[in-house]
Amino acid sequence: MKHYQVAIIGGGPGGYVTAIRLNQYGINAVVFEKDRLGGVCLNWGCIPTKALVKVADLYGEIHEADQFGIQVHDVSLDYEKVNSRKNEIVEKLVSGVEFIFRKRKIDTLKETVIKIIKNEDKYAISTLEGTEVSADFVILATGSTPKSLPFMPFDGKKILSSTDILALQALPQSLAIIGGGVIGCEFASIFMQFGVKVEIIEFLPSLLTTEDDEVGKRMTMAFKKAGVKINTGAGVEQFQQMDDGIHLYTSNGKEIIAEKVLVSVGRDLPFTIEVSGMDLIKDKGRITIDDKMETNLPNIFAIGDITGKLQLAHVASKQGLLAAEIIRRRLAREDETIAPLNYENIPRCTFTNPEIASVGLTEKEALQRYSTVKVGKFPFSANGKALGLGASFGFVKTIVDEQNGTLVGMHIIGPSATELIAQGAILIGKKISNHEVMEIVFAHPTLSEVIGESIEDTLSLSIHQV
Image (cartoon, rainbow, N blue to C red; front, side, top):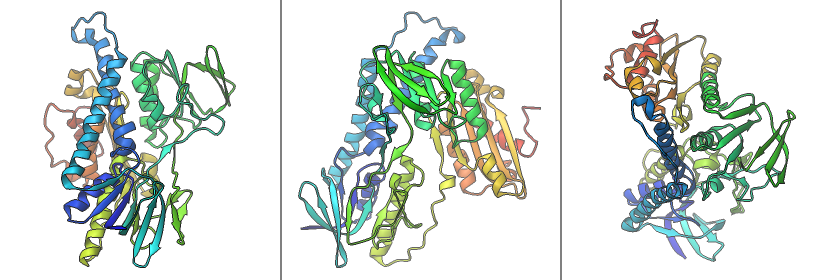
């Protein structure tokens, strides 16, 4: 039985990043990954969807070219080439990670782990394919899968998961999306710009309920303006497949017909590994961890979606890096005290058009936590760079604790929001006050000025608005 210092189960953005960091530390690790390295993010999630986002946004811009004095005629979309480009990007990234593993001589087993057994001071790991290895430490990074509706299973043809929809070889005429969260809204934005008739059905009263209320309302406005139909406060209760498409029947009495249906109602956390003779503590399917990413079982860590924190690739990666650091210190018998990961201060991005990004508390959350808060806002419509880009829809909203001026939340809807939010993450993560931000010079003309003026507005000192 081959022995490793660390066994990592899952090669997604949590698992593969952790393996590389452990290798940099000189720690011997093996990664179990039944598919290709990169997990959902690189292969069937973040990366392929962003490739489609670029094409959708470009296609949308071309149709508005006359506003810039450019006459474009006979524009068409070759979805076969769109798909090919998407696949090439995925292949380049995934093969790049695989190359790093080969160069660093990190072992990867394309097998499915089924059992972990405590064996004195080590763990024995067994796979479905019959391989057995031992390890001093185990990191669980098994990820999540798309959740289906109980009465409406995925068929990969008409009833689609977020993975299925990326495999489409041709655009549908119409698409119904069940679920108005991040994934549902991203695909709505993509296919709407491709010219597909899109309708969103959301059980909750509004779209993007994890975002600040104003952001969700503004995104709804943008969707409606673009022709996306939105049904909130309604759930799909049953469906029928007919010759003219899928018929969805909602709780508010509507019948919606679409060629294809994307079910985007969250993700399941399947954990089918037997941890023999040990009680791995879970809460509603999520594996419980401490600030060191360690489970209740000694030297068994968990990272990524299965921990039930934020289901974001960069969260899984950061958790993995922290777990790697703890393992390094434990092997070196060093102090294991680390700063806990503050999940509130991790940026969250939604790649719709317009883009959405946030970090810290929403206004509602801040009001519940602090005695008084101050809110500053500044619109992109008053920013020269945004006007030049022809992308002036949206705003930056900043929330501060009024008692000391500390920034506690930032919410952006508008151009390059997912890039701009890094500034908010730094300012909030470092507990900067609005008075301290006044000492920073924001370059002109840039979109970043909107962030500066939003923060100035918390002091009623924004220059370019009344």
